[in-house]
Each structure stands twice: as C-alpha cells, then as structure tokens.
Image (cartoon, rainbow, N blue to C red; front, side, top):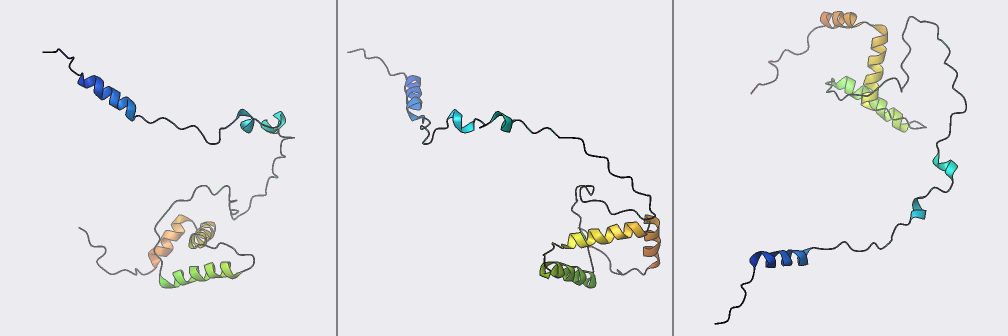
Length: 148
C-alpha cells in the first residue's frame, strides 16, 4: 500500500478562490499629471475683491411693506391648496397669458398664489383675515372626509 498524501480540502478551496479573482484591467486612456495641473498659477487663485461695496441707501419708512426681493424670499415649501373652479380658471388664464406673451414669462399657479398672498399680507392683518372669513357663509355642509 502506498501512502499518498491526502489532499487538503481548505488549501484546494483557497487556491480555487485565488484563481477566480478578477484583476483590474489597465486603463485605455491613462490620466497624466499635466492634464490636471492649472495652466497659470494666477488662474488657480480666486480673484481678490477690488473694493467693498457701498452700503445700500436707507429707504424712507412707508405705510406698506415693500415686496421682498427674490433673494429675501427664502425657501419655498410644498403645501396642498384647494381652490374653486373660478380661481382655477383664473390661474390657468394667467399661465396662458405668460406663455403667449413676448418675452415669455413663467407664470405658474404657485407664483400666482404667492403674489396674491403677498398682496393680502400688505393689505390685511391676520386678525382682519380671520374676521372677514368668519363673516362669510360656510360653503361646505357635507359630512366631511370618511374616516377609517
């Protein structure tokens, strides 16, 4: 009887795993250092401000608030808004008017609602809005939304 060494199962599995590994292919278009180097040292440095800007002139106080500049408006938030048919048709007519005018103006329904709310904020206080809405008749007489 010949004594042949028994094959080591773990060694054969490790060898098989090493053969199965894939190597990264060489790049077709190698990147060189010159491709990413700036052409001029001055181009890499940001330009320094020439002189500080003059402060804006102080506006005389008015009774009505001025409309905020677009940079002052801040982030917008998504809200759900329910409107009646006449209001929806008006917002659609404003959108069509903006699209057919020259130059074209993007008049979205959201922009129309923001404009209307800014004008309402200029003309009325929240207490006045509440009083006006309380004096109007309630439109909904139904049972409301079905609950689960």
